[in-house]
Length: 85
Image 1: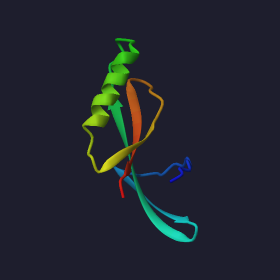
Image 2: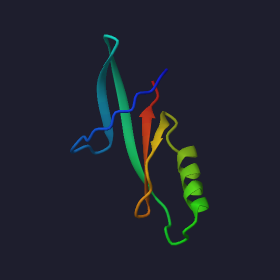
Image 3: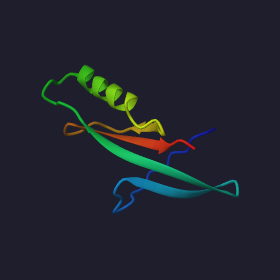
């Protein structure tokens, strides 16, 4: 399966984004969830960032797969998960 990345803003979303997408005339439902993970910026160490991500992703709900890791800023890392279908 090929991935197509489309960036958009969805206002007033609490937890999960449900999308109905038309692919080759077929309607598909896709769910995404964005989680923001905190990490300690005082260490200034990339190993800390990698360790935090590895632990959080490994222990995340197994019904969700990692889709995208955003750019870290201000001690937070946004991670997008896609619901496994």
